[in-house]
Length: 116
Image (cartoon, rainbow, N blue to C red):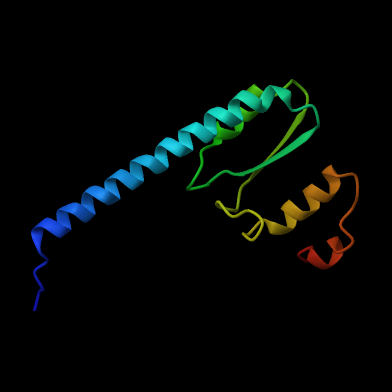
C-alpha cells in the first residue's frame, strides 16, 4: 500500500533541495573561475591525467587547463581504459608508472605491476 505524504512538507523539502543544488553549482562556478584565474601563475611542469571515458568531467576541462597555463609546462596523459577514478581504475598501473616517471624516478614495483 502506498503511503501518502503531506503535500506542504513535501513541497518545502523539494524547494530546499532545489536551492541546495543551485548553491552547489554556484560554488562550483566560483571554484572554476578561481582556478582559471590562477593557471597562468603556475610555473612548474604539470602532469595532467584524464580518462577518455570520464563520466564526471569532459576532455575540455583538460584543454582549458592547458590553454590557461604557460606553454610547454603541461604533459597530458589520456587513459583509454578508465573512468573518473583513475588511481584505482583499470589503468592504475599506467597512472603510477607515469607519475613516477614524471617525478624523475622509476616505480620500484613496476615489474610486479606489469601484466604478462
